[in-house]
Amino acid sequence: KVAHVSCVCLISTCTDLPNSTSEEILHHLQNIVDFGKHVMKQFFGENYVHHGEIIQLPLDFVRQLCLKIQPERPESRCDKDMDTLSGYAMCLPNLTRLQTYRFVEHRPILCIEIKPKCGFIPFSSHVSQEIKHKVCRYCMHQHLKVANGKWKRPSKYCPLDLFSGNKQRMHFALKSLLQEAQNNLKIFKNGELIYGCKDDQDCVSDWNELACHLKPFFFPSNGLVSGPHCTRTIVKELIHVITMTLLSSTDACRAGDMKTVPISQGRSYCEASAFNKELVRNGKHKLESSGLPRDCLLYKTLQAQMLDMLDIEGLYPLYSRVEQYLEEFPEERSTLQIDGPYNEAFYEKLLDLSTEDDGTVAFALTKVQQYRIAMTAKDCSIMIALSPCLQDECSEQRPVVLTSKSRFTFSVSVLDLDLKPYESIPHQYKLDGKIVNYYLKNVQAKDDPVMSNLFKENEDCTLVLHKV
Image: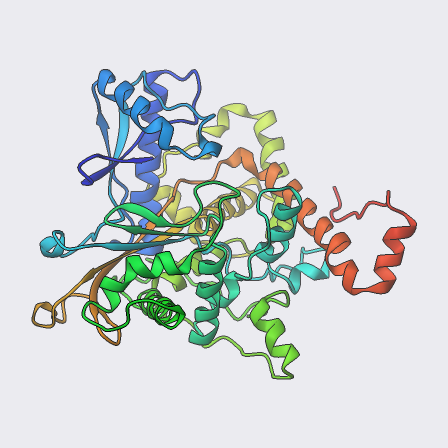
């Protein structure tokens, strides 16, 4: 994905279908558009989802574009080739700009991209390791990523703090993201990246440099010029604005006809959260969730995530049931809509939230498709675009957030809503085992002398997490 030079739209060409025909690429892109239009808009709402449209570009333009942007692509993406043969592409709005009230487009625009990740702890009875009922997936995965060299140090960010609805916990989560952005936070100024990781290891936080970029937004005529006090004040204002926009609603949609999954299922805090650990150290009671407003984007994101009702451990046997059926009746793959079309009929099948397994392929497939939706919601990005707004321009029709010295009109959007592949489920099953095994052996064991000695006595021992 690359910003168009005019910053009016986003051009995205297909990179994941090597050796595909133009017709196959067109079909793939149409599936992406239909999925956003007919499925994800039902979960998130009309104003939050921009499904885009398919366009055809001159091949010479695509080739020149590919050459132009190649030096600017992250190193981790350089091994993925852009499609320069079909000419088909998706045209999407540039979400670093305001998506509403374009009267302010000539003014400076600040955009914060947040990838919140999974905001709940599994509540499924299929979970085989108790640690998964106590520590969230993100916090456990951090340790494995550091061990594998993806990041230099673990982040203090915990998604459950952000999704708690408690402003104190949300502020802590956002501050942690700003301290260790990894690939979960980026800040753009007029469409250009000014803060965030450019690659897996580039994670050095420079709040002073960030404050210089942000000062004109938050203190346009203030005497605060430099120094640690100024930097802390500006960062605090930024965190306040992000929190307020995340808790706001710019869309009346309440996830269509979807019956909500009770958020009360499972605990509302993660034992590995740095915020929670600080409370325990200070001898305080755990600060429970204040609850998210039902019409804010975080709530809708969490609801979509919680379609993962069985956890991958409960889901994998159902996936195997579907696979066995497809081995016997491969011609049924199209009828089951595994590869689309992602239309209203596909969405209707997602509305069944029952967890009572009747042994049928239909039940298994419904849970598999719900899991794919949940995984998509767990990996999406939230884009918050802000622009200074004068007092006489503000009205009830325009969403506005206030700071001590400024006011902003804003728009909130969701990005990266491509449906997660059906074929990725075995990988997710294996990855889940690796994450939990590593955490139990190398993190929790350090705090448990008995477990630590057990591992020292037998370094070759294997933790068996799942019955196969």
